[in-house]
Image (cartoon, rainbow, N blue to C red; front, side, top):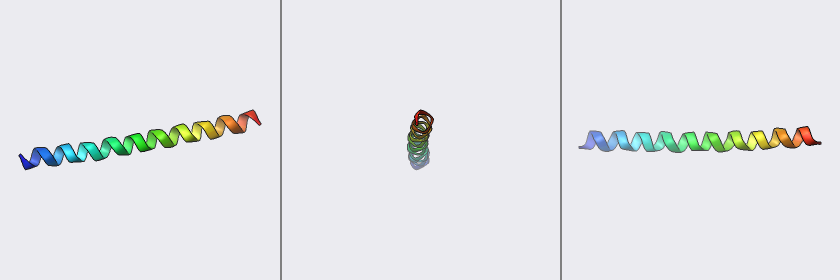
Length: 38
């Protein structure tokens, strides 16, 4: 049972990290678009 919880926990952490990276990518995309506009 503990092994399962551990796996679940790790996958949770990985998912949140991926979401963070996605957010950063979106921010960078916005920055690039803004620079291209000006």
